[in-house]
Image (cartoon, rainbow, N blue to C red; front, side, top):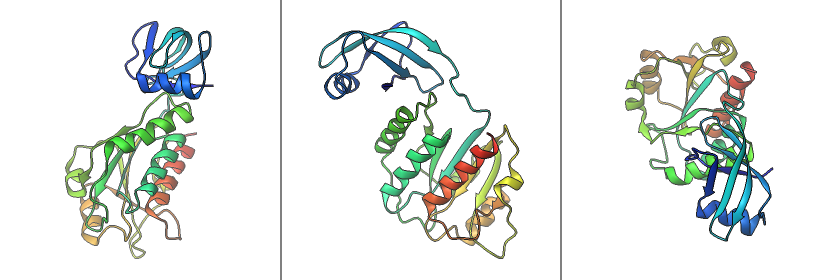
Length: 234
């Protein structure tokens, strides 16, 4: 099954952009009559037939449409501190997209070793994972933001912060999450959140979480939280 990301689709005919057309004809070697699938990132899955092609342009005819394809009954937003090694953050984005996530925000914390991320590159990682895993919904990647500014944003979801302070009272995700809800989970940087940051989050209505007895890398903690929320909403 060959899948292309087509966020601007809006009729029963469509022309792949130059990059996707080149991939279709030069890499996949597809030609007239071949059947492909398109995803629009907002729940639409389209079955289409190639009606004509050049190296730079592939023309398609839509032959079947499914709306709200595999729509999840919950909404998950993970706000995660970018890792020093950007490959680890990209790994998280890829795997979280495959498992299921709606929104991601890179948050800059006091102990963050990486203060800048390239959104275009990260979005490409997400898009590739969307196509690979046949997700009709494209996760939203927000611009990076400081933790203090993030905590001030209006947020009506169930809010949680995972941290490693053993002396603090913390709960497991399974103790807090109810199915079919909207959730925001904060994941800190290498070295964890500072005590002041944790207190700020608690004062902003975030519930303290533990992800287990072992010390996890940032990207592992974020993915563990993503998986558990999806498992509880299975």
